[in-house]
Image (cartoon, rainbow, N blue to C red; front, side, top):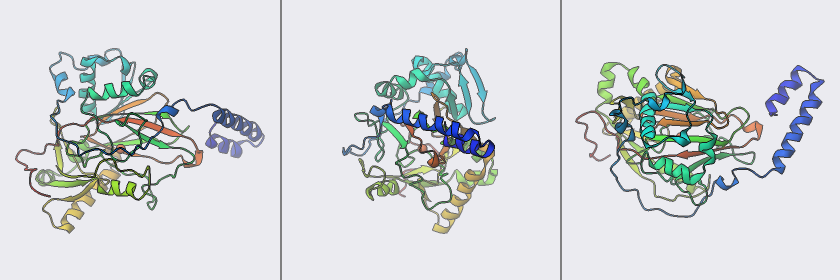
Length: 371
Ligand SMILES: [Fe+2]
């Protein structure tokens, strides 16, 4: 029984208060008495230190599916509901844990095309455990090890998101009126992630949804003249602030790899679909190369405001137990919603984050120039 339900009952029907409160108290006691099922996957902040990442050749699994006679055949027996016209699908009737190599390639292509795909009823996938998560992710690219986040002990490739009643909530934006921070994961890397998988091991009764937005749609809303200008631009993405946040003793207080800054095109071309997407985000993009400071700030602010407020590009995932979500980090942005503090409930998620190619811009854009 959630706190919310109890509070609703208190308003609606006084005689029910005692009953509901008693049920809630009983539930809480039984929760406390039972060991946490995924205790072995709780965040571990190892003191390991890693050398800089090195470039590698990325072969996109979605490209392999292009030559398939029916590249959506893995969905043949599934129910697919489109969440919005241009972003997001919800799928029932596919067991991700059973997908073979060919079907995983098809999955990568489907996620590239839809930006976001939500799979329901994936208990087998989640219960296969961390060795399987790693094997799953490696099909799609070299696994990224996050420089500052917690991971299950022995599995640094599994990025964890975690809060419970003892956590400091809203800790990265505690002086902001909102917890919404649109971003593309670790975009400061030379080869940022592509197809990304996230699922929750524990979740609040309500709240903790995840927002997604299509950076393809966001770009298309702009005028042709402005898009043409944006295609000529590149921007610096930085991991320095994230590392400094940890070095100040917050989160796990560790920095396992020195932070990097890299220059990426402002308009990115997806290597398989050929679609163009905006590739700037409030969390990691710092400035546009070659412009005066005021010009860079004005353009980035305009783009961030556009991304923030365009609900017509967005989809919202409401997590249910055993939901597994995949998105293409190259053509979408996302934000957590930290609205469940008062419930005192645990939210524990695991992310599998394969890196992809170095972002490619419009033809002729030179990314080798210094920042
Ligand atoms: Fe993220």
